[in-house]
Image (cartoon, rainbow, N blue to C red; front, side, top):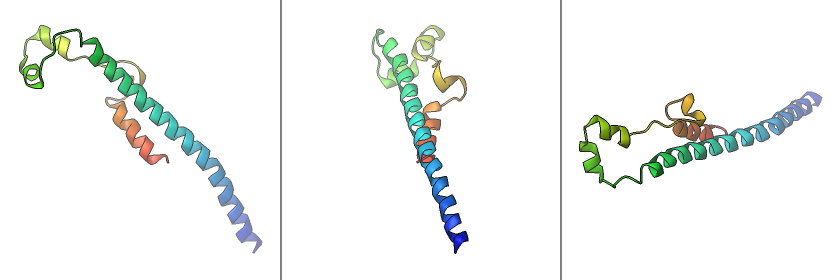
Length: 97
């Protein structure tokens, strides 16, 4: 019976480490996802000074000069490491809890 008690204590100690670590990783993934959305929103707000076009008009614009003003590449945060960090962090948030 002492081996059962020892196994239970080992399980409790693993849970004691696992829960805080999972919580920290979950919060970090959520914050990083928020940061990615903030970076993406800043790209849109910086281009909002130009005249607004509907989705249909914007998709038909093909000139090089106007396409450079329509499409911007995000920089900073996890965008240096993965192409879609907001989705990556969403997956991490679902795995860690």
